[in-house]
Amino acid sequence: MSTTDDFARDWHAWHEAHEARRSDPLGFLAVTGLFWLGPEPLDLPGAPGVWRLGAHGPEVDLAPGEQLVLGEKVLSGRHAFGPITSGAGIAVAFGDGEVQGSVEIADRGGRIILRPRRSDAPYLVAYEGTPAYPADARWRVPARFIAQEAPRSATVGSVVDGLEHVFSSPGSLEFEIDGALHRLTAFAAGDQGALQVLFRDGTSGVTTYAASRSLAVPAPDEDGATVLDFNRAVNLPCAYTDHATCPLPPAENRLPVAVEAGEQVPASRA
Image (tube, rainbow, N blue to C red; front, side):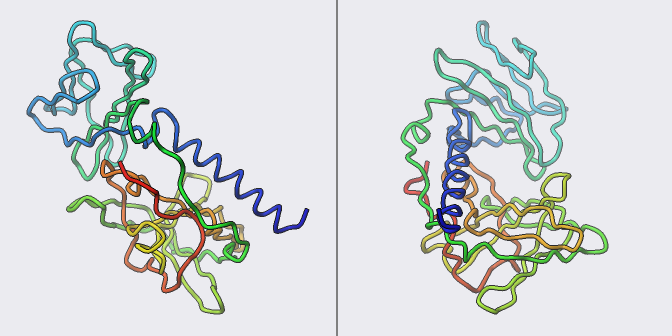
């Protein structure tokens, strides 16, 4: 088998695994709504409880016979969740016959959102996969990480008007495409030195999702060497549903070339 065949085989295995995670019964394709929580009582369609924002965070009132599960704890009656860490969230599970369900409770820009998920969500049930460019080793590009003296906070916009996201940026990634030098601002991704880039390029809004694509980047070695495998550029949840609060790339992360690699526009949206 040729090196090209090996490369394509490895990419197909990776993409199938990525699609399997995305199609999890309680993954993002199972989201049925996006609700901004306030002090007024809120009934969540398809999920237990009446929800409100209390003095110290989100609260839920569960009717007799209703319950939620938080970790190993079964919740009934009234439960106060307390403060939610900025940018983070928790999930509580429920069952509805044979259907699995959960409610995501998260802080986005200092506001609390609720996102119910159901394993029978129509979009998830009908999902047939995401088209992608054929794997091409040309788009596996060597890169050099240029570290800053200290990580800086990078504030970017969101697909939701007025909402901002804050990331830690330890530096940038420099690379060449067809002899031209490019640079992308990188965000920290975990505690093992891995990086993430959000970017647009010449395919955005044409064959790929207009707002952004995301690329995971292996931790650079001691000399700063790593690789940008654009074949593994993926869509964020906002490519599939309006019930997302995805970040937008920083302004400098618009590449002036058409990166004809990675995932393309989904066939449909929730």
